[in-house]
Length: 296
Image (cartoon, helix red, strand yellow):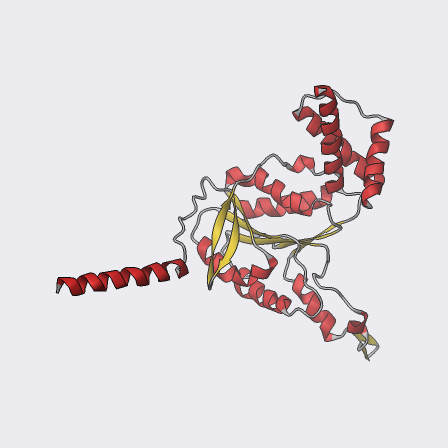
């Protein structure tokens, strides 16, 4: 009898050794008192939240020249943190103009009041109902952040997102809100062919249903904020700000000069754009060179 039991246990161990790698990993619950941000990962039929180590050194004051957008989203977020009605927000416009930075700066502003940030990829937005279930009973306030949300022609995922937004977030718990950024106002490319079947009824034009279907997706967001390309003056203001910040951290003496201004303009021309990201990168480049010269 003992030999049979021994053989059985050995076979059971072999079976478990083969099955164990296929089982989902047991993950510890996130301590939201210590964790300020996380990223959603899909796993099998479910998913899990991975805690992120983030820095809170970016503040609202670092966002130059987008005062109106900053004030509107800050006001909406303050309402949300205080338990008042607030809207899902779509931040759309030119690349590198501060859309994502604004969302992260708001986390710095309200982290002490219980605001938390969860990043979720566009391809995983269908998991929103599962994610909301994990957050519904928690005391913190969660902004679900989808960066660079857009869909290409022919993709049907945007219809899934529409139903998910209606089905999960429109009736979501009071502690969950969705902020998304996009380079497109309506999240989908609009083709000339979409407008070829317009009809005239009683003197009014009624757009093709394809156009209405696409526009309806962005209508799910109650707050739209537009970000426009920088003028040269705006770009130089942002450059000056970030040079001051970088130089201040490094205790570097500096002065704004015509030479520095021209260097910043050449930097932007070489990259074919003037935006906040470009200004930040130039500031790091210029301050880094000055520090290298000082070390020599």
